[in-house]
Length: 269
Image (cartoon, rainbow, N blue to C red; front, side):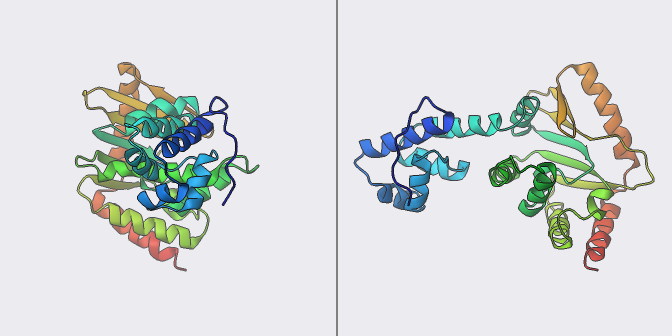
């Protein structure tokens, strides 16, 4: 277990979180082991948190409740999650988490449908210098999938380019597990997946349309290392027309599931 180090809460958001947890624990006269027992974690993990390695959102909620922090810790973790992404993605990720409907075209499996191993393989490919906290990024991406566990999950309609299923990302084992998960989650009444065959025209990059609780619509486009989040109705309408064409050219839902089963068998070879 790492020793308790001096923490300057003004140094970083992580240090502020560490100081908050440590101070709240000590004010209750608890040892790290006491807090660990109350949140069903380990003393080592509590020590890491108090030394500047923040918890994931699930553990953060437990600590927040036990230490009676009134949501302050959870709010800081959400802020940390958002600032971990490029500026152009922050508004989109915020709105995606509260959207009532999500429609998109994707050249790879979208984050909301990725398995951890598939997400990890993509992130390693995009980070050849090894400068990114891959495991932290994977964890945050998978946590965002909890939108599907809400009492009122969003209506999600994904059009996948065929290559997202046929190309090997990471390994054939990773692809088998990813396609198996797609087939499983597509059985939920609010998740629909269609496949766009390679002979049909596509656009470069990915695009996503959101319908917010207010009824407003937004659009997000992303390429390698860049993206744009659009709120202007005329821009959103333009992206909607592109999506509608791709959606119309894709295989039907039942045909798409059969295509996924066929792709699954091919990854067994």
